[in-house]
Image (cartoon, rainbow, N blue to C red; front, side, top):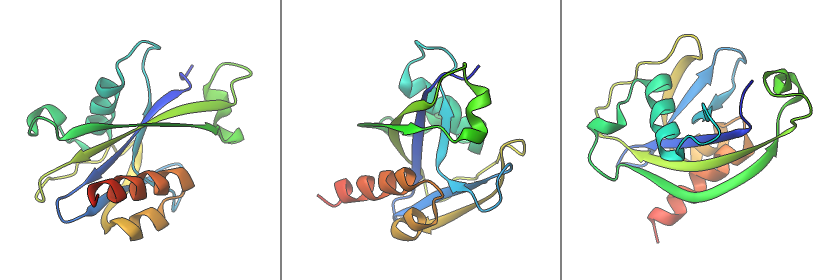
Length: 149
């Protein structure tokens, strides 16, 4: 059973382009890296690091220190009814913690074919609009409103 605590990682380049990946199980479902904790006590940053590697092949530990940063923001959302079978009976909500990861402009992407079929680098506003999840778009816009302050 999945744990109803997850991370969302907005991956971006210094020029402001944001990485979006398309899910295999839903056509045109574009998103940032996301994933549930493996154990209830898993460190959030470690979960983010693990999910980034699993979904994109990016090894966070090989990037400059501080490349991954916790945005210290979390949301609770309703789990889509189609996906509730993955959780314990009666679980309908998930708590998602937001992170950002700045990568070098030439970072190669190696998708997990089990989870994603395509990726794109898009300007932040365009990426936010393309996200299937409204909160994913909000995470992107929140990140870039902070970087301009």
